Each structure stands twice: as structure tokens, then as C-alpha cells.
Length: 452
Ligand SMILES: *Cc1c(COP(=O)(O)O)cnc(C)c1O
Image (cartoon, rainbow, N blue to C red; front, top):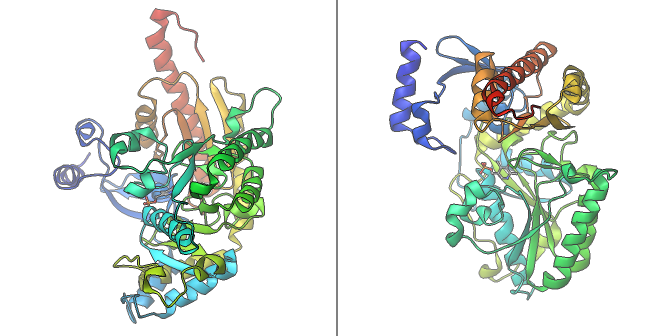
């Protein structure tokens, strides 16, 4: 590493408290200073390039340094960067809200700046809506096993990733949890749809018992991301919509990670033919350029707040609500979807990357190879205890940025991925797995452990 790189690394380590990490680990594990990005590439200060196969934490859609998005933001800067949205409005926020209505069928858009805030808004709105309707006892929330909805206190209370939430248990509202429809749970001869139906039976039992106290159930449609890209059958969502209608429970679709084409359709809920009561969006909404999130609802929810009484209104706010630059970036992202036929092209790219990855299906020790839209994942059997770190580092050496979750390797690349990038990711993965298995062969041969 050059002097310049190591200077940024040292300064960052002492001044920046990095997210989602034990800082002490960075005594060994280097932090990588990034100088610039272009397309799928990130480049460090030594000119070494990495394929951003995780879209900079799932936010980037069309690559870095994208001319259209950049120019839209620059153009917006010349007229209005930001204005208070309480009592004021502006062109990008109006146009974006209308566009999102057209695309989702949900006509009322409430804005914030990050995903966790969108979760908070949906939870508060759901509870407040029932309260306005004379049902204040409906104050509990249901989430799925292995769910992830963000890190703020309300969002953590519906998150089931103990590594993130267990420490804060005394601070969190006690909520209800139902079985995950994770297709990997299929017994021999069972389909993903069978697993979904079993999981739905669990929801129905809970609703039968508790619906009088339940405001909403919150789900990550089709893919439970942070838990390790667990995928499930759309039938789960179709049936869940029916149960929510029957038992008067709101359905909150957290499409923060899966929205904007990630699962193959613009919104994942479309594959189940359903409309949620609340749709939470963020991450890809600005193509990874600026922080923005949004909760969409329909007239039924909105009308429950519309009244002469101020207290029946939704008095929630964030300083940067509806930021003009972010809304303008989001409008450009939606224009790109239309102009460049993104969903159809992604379907082709997904097929192409699947071709590159066929070797996964016949490699012993690799299980549950799965893909939906522009998300790929597989699990590694008998992984060594430091697998995710070792894999991360070895892939970096080969110019690929990946971030396995435990023993799950996944790719969630920008949609501008080309054949050569697919090849590099696939070949590097194959090499690195072989390397790590050789290492574990060496370390296990003394104990005579059977190998993958
Ligand atoms: C990332 C994520 C969130 C939280 O979004 P932040 O912007 O990180 O607060 C919530 N839900 C899901 C499904 C996510 O993937």
C-alpha cells in the first residue's frame, strides 16, 4: 500500500467511527480508501480497481460516475438545493411523488433520508391510523424470523438479527415473530411454495389469537437480505395479503433493498400481484447518489389522518424531508428505467451471469445456489470460522469487492455489469473457494475430518 493510501487509512481509523464493525478489528483488517469510481469499478489511491459487486451496500443501480444522474443533480443545484417541506413544496418532490403513484398505485408519499427512518414512519403511521380509527389496542408489530428493517430503536424491534439487536433488547418494544418462508427450509420433495404455505399457517394462527392487538406485519418481499439473501416464493405474499385483509392487519412492504428492479420487477410485490398498505423505499431510489427514503400509502390510510383535529395528523418530520437534489436524482433514475428498458436488459444479464455461475451447481460443498433478478447467493458448507473475512480479502486481491454474510456468498451488482466483469467475479470466486478449501484441508487433515 502506498504512503498516500496508508495515510488516509490511519486518519480514517482515528477520526471516523466506521459503521457495522468492531473498530479494533481494523488493526488487522485494512480499511480501503477509495479515490474514485466509474461504472462497476471502485479505484483506490494506488490505482487498484475493484468490481463493486455489492453496489456499495445495495444502493448503486447504474454504476458510479453516471453521466445522466450527475447532470440531473448539477442542473438541480442551479435552481434549488433544498427547502423546508413543511408548508412549502418544489418541483422535484411533486413530480417524484406523482411518478411513484403511477408506478405503485399508492398516491401519498412521505419522505425521509434513510431506510430505517422509513421503517419508523411506517410503524408509527400504522399504529396512529388504527388509533384514529378507534382501535388504540392495535399497537404490536409482527416481523419474520431473520428479518432486517434497520438500526434505529423502532426498526431494531422488528429486526431479528441478534448480532445487531440482542444488546439493545431492554430498549426495544416487545414484538411478535413468525416463521420465515425461507425456501432453503424445504424438506425432501417439498417446493418453495410448500414452505411458504407452512409459514403462512403460522401467521394465521398468530392473527387468530392476537389480531386485536396487532397493527401491522412488516416483511422484506421475496428476499430477506441482511440475514443472508434468504429467498422465498411469491405465494407467501399473496396469501399474506389475504390474511391481512381478513384479520384487519396492515401489511408493510419493506422494499428498501429489493425495490427498483432488484428482484426482476420494479417492485418485488408485483410478482405476488399484491399492493401493500405501506411501501418503504430507499437505497436504490437515487441510484446510490444521495440519501432519500419514502413511505407510500393509499387513500384509505391517508384519509384516516385527514381531519380538522391537528392531533389526528401525522406530525412526524426530518430536517431534510423531500430534499430537492435527492428527489431530482430519483426522478432521473426512474427516467433511466423507462428510456433504457432496464428490466428487460437485466433479465438478459441475469441469464448471462447464471451461465458463468453454472459450476456452482456441481461443486461439492456449495449449497442452496439461488438467484432472483439481480441478486445471487449460495452457502458454503463446512466453512472455516473466519470464512467471510478470508473470502473478502482473497477476493479483494483479485479486484473484486464482496462481503459474505457468514458462510453465504452473494452478489448484488450494479445493473451495468458486463460479461467481462461477470467472468472476473465468477473465476475469482471459483479460485478463492478452492484456495480456502485447500487451507481447511491442510488444517483439518490432522483431525481426519471429512471434507466438503
Ligand atoms: C438497508 C435496509 C434497511 C435500512 O436502511 P438504512 O438506509 O440503512 O437505514 C431497512 N430495511 C431493509 C430491508 C434494508 O435492506
